[in-house]
Length: 266
Image (cartoon, rainbow, N blue to C red; front, side, top):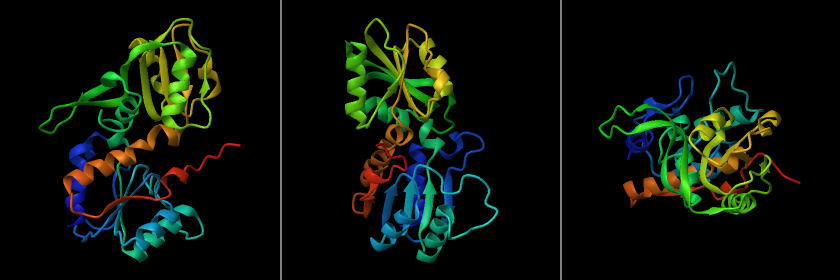
């Protein structure tokens, strides 16, 4: 198995060319012709994840966030990014990131959130175009769907907290009516609040919401569950995808995935 075989499988699911302009989805370290004997799946490519991959005999890492996002002026092993780069190169580990390519397909990050909540009629919240592959599917950020039965606002928030295993949910003033339609965007999703409202959502879920966005109109409330918590399910999506595509190949999720959130709660 070569890196290019793994990349092809991932990009059939999350096409490289639907990534947001300026993003750095794709192969970060290594060659497409490199042989792969095992894949380690993680969320962020940290030095600890590279160590875990090497110890497990995995010579390829697939994660959501790019290890190299901004152009690097230097590679310093004394900082986390530089250490991860150095360890990957020394260990012969290829590193691939599926970032906004996985954010902008309905089976990806936001769709995984919606499925985890048990929503029906799941669709893209903010469609931007059609995929240029044979599927012709729409792509765009966010997802929206309906609960099987309407819930009181606080019941809906309790469902969100339980479903995503969050330590806390930061939310705006509860609406007066019930919640039936829920919109969401994994990661930093403040820019889609108005799209969620226009689509008829009574609740919008994402991460990284700043203070002033919590002053909401009476017909919608927002919930910030955290960046990591809203996106980490994509790791399990890639696990299922690769195990189905390569059933006899060594694919494993990092054993510390649930503890890899860099944000701690007291």
